[in-house]
Image (cartoon, rainbow, N blue to C red):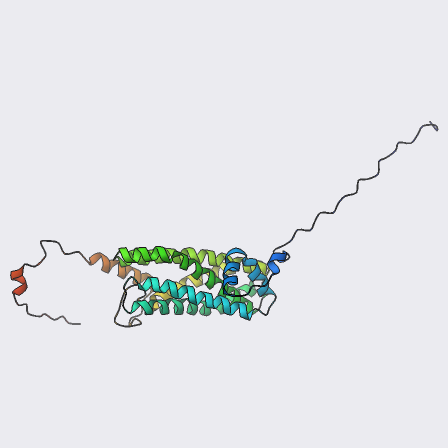
Length: 273
């Protein structure tokens, strides 16, 4: 037994340590700065993490300004297409109202966004929330600008106000979905631990924008005044618009007046207002 050779054990194979997984914040491309109008548009469409990273590092005042400028430009162009449905004063009134409505809705909801993000565990300042909201508006209006040619075709080929309103609502809803996803990714980047508060804020933001579209009416149709003189809830306004459009009936051949009837004088009638 003493003469037996001991069993040789092969040396252990050296293991190669696995490469660390790069997070969104550690990726080299995400740390490149965003500058310029075109650069901001390309970043928010292709690499939104670059914008999130720059906001998290602070000193992003120029980027916020650029995103707000993109929002104004795209919303004004889309508003021009919206105003082409009624023409006249709506060619300048619709762009002004759309820009005012979007910015008013965003700044009204900014304090609640900051509060809900803090309650959800996000490590961010108010300026960071302003930057994310500016990115939300920029992405939303860029998508609306992409839908503008389609909206123009329908605005020039139909006279149905409810149909055009529904079409613009669909475009706005699609743009809002992608914009809210950008906001959600930004809050994840800031280590938000809960989605409940963000869901509540999303509902509030949608309701505010819908009500703002009614408070600034008409945006698609025409009116003798720039702003309405009557307060309405947006659902009541939609119902009234659809009802008034349904009551308008085209004049048939039997209802058209004959030349003899046209020469007959008609006494004016008055209604009690």
